[in-house]
Length: 282
Image 1: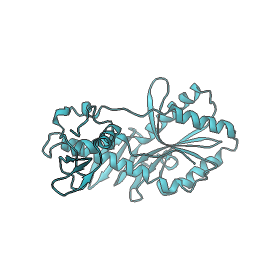
Image 2 (image 1 turned 90 degrees about the horizontal axis):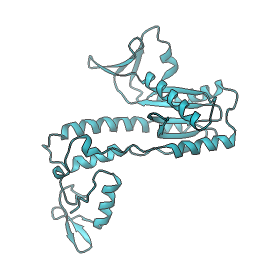
Image 3 (image 1 turned 180 degrees about the vertical axis):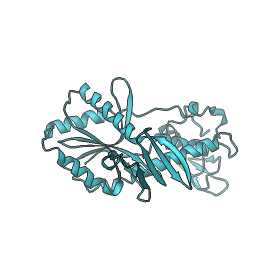
Image 4 (image 1 turned 90 degrees about the vertical axis):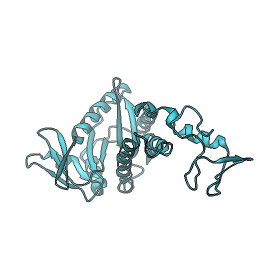
């Protein structure tokens, strides 16, 4: 059962909106575009889990996507959390192409593509840290002795996994997404004793939902962009040009003839994405 559905991350919406309102030769366009591409790739990788997760029993498993909790000291974000009466499983999702070499000596991930090496933070270390933080969070709500396992899930089947001969941890921790439902069931079978009854399972699910806190980012401040640098006016949904013209109760594009709805609805859409404090449709 999906208790917290996956949504398009707010920062993707913000980046897309800002890029529409910057002139093409703006100094920040390249940086924003690269960061947007990375976030879109990550979101695509997370969405790739939807199909293998659909094979899990709705009655047996509660699934939470993009869960951000506070452990009393720090916030931490979990790509996907799977809750059953026997244990909790955390999924750290990576959508990285090429050959991935897991270096346990230096706790890093090395991506090899086109004969070039690129280092990444070790996702196993990251998932282990999230397990520790989740244990602290559970104690705050008097949920104790619930086993927690973590997996690093590689969303692309075309990604090649590699490691040193003595790094057996990778075989238990890192999997391709196609293997995910089988791995989850095998982990659940390892723990024979139920730690949560039906009632406490629902209680914990509700606490997880209530504990979620959306990350709020001032995207303009983050990229040092002044509101005065943004193109004002209503963007045409047909040809994407600025600005549309107000004609009676509609907005009209003088270039392609497309009409749009009231200014208020456009204003609400901009504020929904939390990019602008002021109305830019004027």
